Image (tube, rainbow, N blue to C red; front, side, top):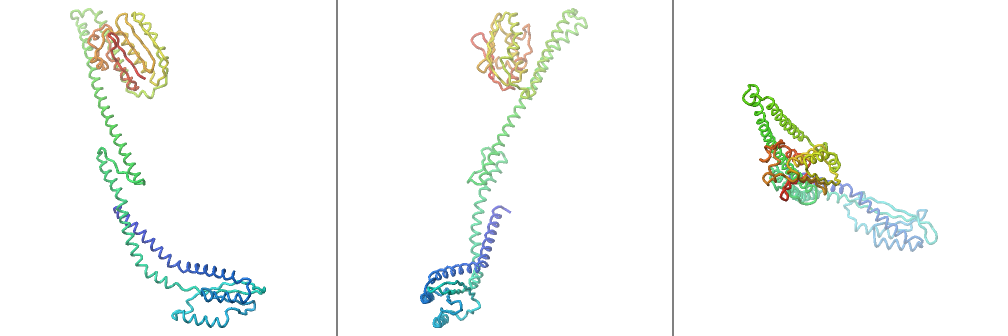
Length: 454
């Protein structure tokens, strides 16, 4: 059953029940209420007459009671003494009263349908004589009114249901209109259409429901977009892994093939390969280079773990001071000018991996600094700067490629100190996992500068 029909039937049923209960209450409660009202009126009127005749002479009392009888017949008073001697009404007044009653009372009513009640109070007249004042009043039957109400019940019920049904229908249509609009909007939301909102009208629970659906849909779209970006990120990560494995295979294949050729030449004594001492040393050198490459690859694989679990609050100044002694010695050996300026800086990071990234940067600075050149390490104002007077400055294209795995500038491929081409790639991975910004650039005409922003 649709909500419009439900609301209509429910509202109409409530109206029917309310009208029925109201009319039934009137039918059964009206006699009781009527009796209470008439009794209260008679009591008030009796008290008023009582206050007027109290302490008066007997003649004055009779005059006051006679005047009241001529003006109103709601109460019939009787005044007597303690010996039941009646002072009022007199015989003449009784005869006049009977004639009046014969003219006013309809002969169709019998005395049995009237209900008489009495009020009495003792009073004293002016002479101090104790008298009894008695008031009699009649409760006229209201059975006719109840019967009329019973006859009017079907008509009243019909009009009540007609008007109530019309109001219930209009209310049902109006109250369900907003729910239908919300339903149409939510059906559009199932297809994930953008810019779809449920209309928020009013300040009741239905408006709150529409607002909650809008928030839920907004959060859903945000989550879907986040998942899409995460999927793209995962796909890009998988692509990078595949590319890294391809380049790793290439980097390992060439030296291994070269070493196998030298070993075969030594085994079969071909030409110059008969000099085993020379070529065994060369094979060992190749193996050492490949071992270094494997260690770098293992270091990269460890970066796949979540570094957040091992992050800690640390003093970067203290960390650098404890690990710069070997670089100072190396600077003296290679005749470099190594300048260090450190200010206090507290950060939250993985101590081991951040130190490895900084050491990789210092290693590169020492490897590619010109003879007798300068190297500067400065920490302050929320950033770490490593500068060196380079043998050759990198251009913009080389700087963009320098963070790729196994990339080395052409001029450095045949250097005597070699290099795996993974140092800056590892630096990039560590800094990005820590969400630290960085910049690598050429400054002036001879300086290369790497800046880490904390």
